[in-house]
Image (cartoon, rainbow over all chains, first blue to last red):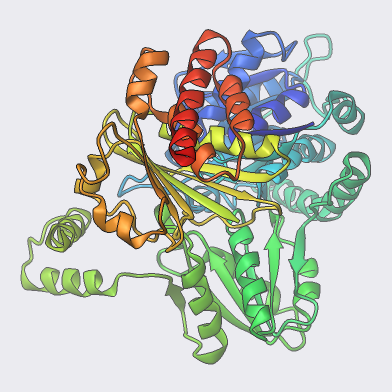
Amino acid sequence: MLKQMEGSKAMAQAIALCRPQVVCAYPITPQTHIVEGLGELVRLGELENCEFINVESEFAALSVAIGASAAGARSYTATASQGLLFMAEAVYNAAGLGLPIVMTLGNRAIGAPINIWNDHSDAMAMRESGWIQLFAETNQEAVDLHIIAFRLAEELSVPTMVCVDGFILTHAVERIDIPEQANVDAYLPPYEPMQVLDPADPISIGAMVGPDAFTEVRYLQYYKQQLALKLIEDLSTDFAARFGREARGLLRTYQAEDADLIVIAMGSINGTIKDVIDEMRADGLSIGLVTLTTFRPFPVEALNAALAQAKDVLVIDKSLDVGMGGPLASNVGVALREMPRPPRLHSAIVGLGGRPALKTSLHRLFRQATVQPWSGPHFLDLNERVIAREIHRRGKARRAGPTAEAILKQLEIERVAKI
Amino acid sequence: MFEVRIHGRGGQGVVTAAEMLAVAAFLEGKHAQAFPSFGSERMGAPVVAFCRISDKEIRLREPIQEPNALIVQDPTLFKTLDVTEGLKSDGYLIVNTSRSLSEIHLDAIVARLPKGHVIASPATELALNYVKRPSPNTALLGAFAAEVGVVSLDSVCEAIRRAFPGKVGEANVEAAKAAYALIAAKAAA
């Protein structure tokens, strides 16, 4: 049913349609509205046979989800930013144990400096944890991906994270088609665990594994994620057939078939990029887009097929691997090695800590990639004046004090001078 | 695409106003996108919310740079920030005030925009009358429907009822209708 509603509320409804049996989460901006929405659905009795467990921290939230999942319950949690880091140990445990928990991540920057706004640093910090990571472009996709995520997680017994841009999606009110319960029930069968702690048939889960078997356990995690590449395509096709909406799959392309320059990005920024591409195409530029939905497992083959004709590839990262550059760009670089004639790779860091990705800036960036390519990561809309002043200031005295506070002071002086 | 930026202060229902406007457009079969300026909201602090309305799917997610219309819920904001930044040269400005546009020093903006595109609506006064609370957002949406169009008064009223079911909603609907009538009467005169 078509509704005009907030992304977080829509996700709460979609998760409820998946009939989770245990929901436990600790509130953190910008994830809060999702969990509040679920709590309300449980309280009102609209989400039946579900226990909403209040916990004292994110570490407890995922630990409860692990216990519930091991006991055979369909388990869900949600977090963001520092919350994900606080549960990091449990994030790895859920994956290593192979428990099919679904988590929503309301993507937000990681401190310090403390920042509540959107970027992908939190998801990237856990990219090696063994969870499947799916990125939503719109709130409709966020709704759909949650339904796919439960089935995907349970078919493989691998935890799955649905990454949703904080504020940009979680707090946006837009048109969303909320699926019918009967359709979701037909798509997502009741949870049939591969392993379960059952007093009638006792087993133990979580053995200590030494050098003789640890590599094999890890290899099988890797193997399952490789299986996920095919399964994600299949589940997306099935989803499209049942729900009458585009299959989301591993990635999708926009104007990319004949494009010399292909932009690669994840999440909500793709909508703005599509508008820019339409405008640049009208100006005669040969430009297209690959929207990556699945980041883990990384879809090397599908990506290389989409890039086969491209001369230049521009990767947009909404996070920074500080000592290296854009993590998505690094991953794409590895994928390009498999190509006979790989395109040139350009990397841009965009939208850190909630800085808006403006159309005008993206126009400039896309033109520059082919006309005047740069080496290393390009930081879009970097305030070079502030950087130069701060570097100069720090050179003058050993005890220069904290950087963040100094930059804020600079900006405040500029702001007051303008008025 | 029609783009609206709403300025106000925390507690004035700025974000809710953008959401109600989006729902009103949705009720008319249009695509709409409402989103806040994502600050750490608190009572009294300047708040901005955005609403895009279009016949096609809205993909753009940047904050609205060049609005077609501005709604200003608190006229004291003109003193502290560049409220009209980016406003299109044929844009609309709807200000919550019981005083005249000259009295709140908006003559320069009135001169810059097409005739009749700047409107003063006594929204707080109307809200106090009908809702018994100084929440000007719904009355301003009534004024918006009268002055700008894009959405009808009926759709605005229905969106208000959905946001505030029951008595509170009906009181807000009355405030919106009264604000609409004031502008319609002025246009007829």
